Image (tube, rainbow, N blue to C red; front, top):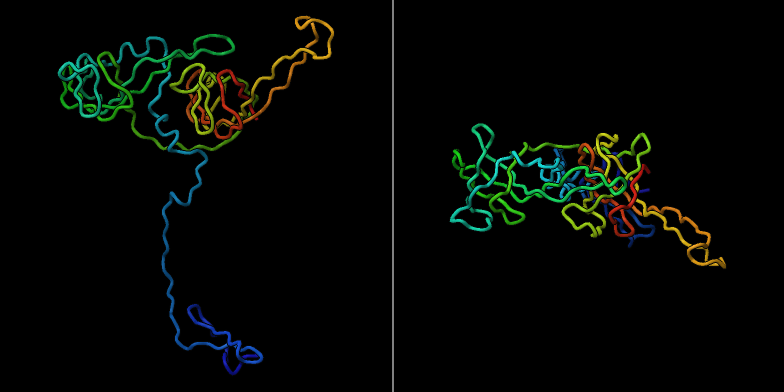
Length: 286
């Protein structure tokens, strides 16, 4: 229908401009002769924009190497700070500490810890380990006994008596979210570096009472449930203590994603939650 204006539609190329002229009756198409020649080219984009992470890296990154679960007295033989620069009570970035127990060849970057709370199983009441509280990092400036160390970073005040562990080399962990192949049921011990009565929500890190010995792996996904309470029958004529009771069902309200596993406990990220996560809440295979 437009042979006079566009003689060969097969020779319309990317970059051509086609005009629809509505002043004509019927409307007509016309091709502007100026042609823009496009050439093939490589288009690039950052890999970080292409991948969709299964777990928010910035939330868990500090927990991949820093928090530790240790046995009782597990830090007793670790190098320790014996004195501080000018006898300061607390040290921060840029301060100097004097450390006993660092031998040559152990590396220059160290992580600083302090013994923390006991991790008690809510079901058996057994102590599964102790949490070592991460305080900061230091760099050895001068070897010796004691060695001189500069504090590079700190999350809490660092002082005499704090213990050191050689920093592990950075590693890239790939997480593949999946449910355990077998049924696993456990409990939330508590929130990392929190009070026993504290609660947490989405993107919080919690400790659970299941680890490698129970078959837990990095990437395991668990459902979170709140245990159902026992209530007395409101229509019973008997006293409250002797009335028939009902055991309410456990209510599922969220999901956990395990990202670091120890022998008896694991760290997990709260991925979904419609209510606060509390110690002793149930976790189980979805």
